[in-house]
Image 1 (cartoon, rainbow, N blue to C red):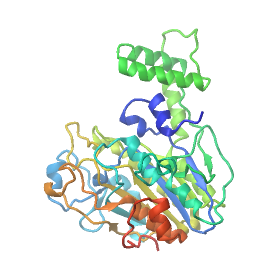
Image 2: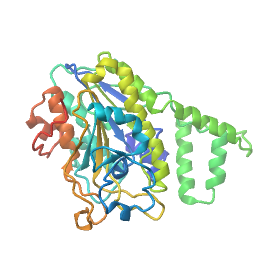
Image 3: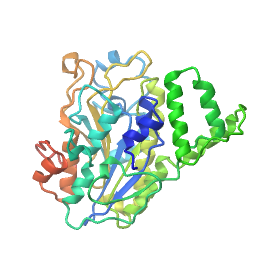
Length: 405
């Protein structure tokens, strides 16, 4: 049986928010189309806090909402917005017009703020339940409308395609040699730690069931002695193959050949706790992914558009743990020689209390699908009617924001 990403995570890594943002889930998927332009879609899993990444430092209200988060010196972009210092190495791209941002965007998803639902809607490109819109991804439906779109060489290593590319049109997939490696020592450790906690004991039991299904059953002769060094080494080896530089380098290699569309994900954006510290790793992965794409693509970078999207933003106010909670309005990151960068797009709603969504979140003023749709139209020439009905059902694209050169 083929399990969806939702069922896989829910059954094997059922540890709340961290599952949906897990760096262990990082497949790369590809498609070839009859065009010389390249599109890279990076899903930022966990709900990236756009107000930290591109911060409205000129708004005097910001300090009152986030008193413990303003210690880091952001880099000026346009006099109003400033870039997080972890992305300082991307400033040359901003200055050359190869990096841009879109503020205050979201999918039509509202109020429930579930990672799984938010990610599904983002990748499916539509909100309608009970229809094929939630059973297929918007890139796959786009390929169905493109004459001559074909399947690339097939790569499948134990992972299914992202929802972005799932559907009737067959595409290729590849994933690095990462694994959920539950060694016998790790299994004993889980049992010891969670034996008195019914909730987490159940989650640990599900993980062990998955391990058995993957032929990693515990050794019946295992004693209760726990080899922490072995556990840590297993985790390190698993994560090495999931890093952004490896994903981006492999994607770039394919994009320099026949592949024209690539998609992968970067997790770690669910920053409920000590966000000023914990967001740095995810930002470092994003920075690495973009710079690796540019370096590895060479001259093909000038024909490439990269769009980074997240399921929702985060609360304007910090919480009691120095983090932020699930919100609504968020941020898109644009990169590549084919984008018109050097600017922050979008209609900024402001941070006044009466301008916030539900008095807690950045108000979304544009549909994130609008910018994805115009990007696809200007890269591949698809008609607006098909984009607003088949690819992004219910979308009103409005006026072209001109994000593609």
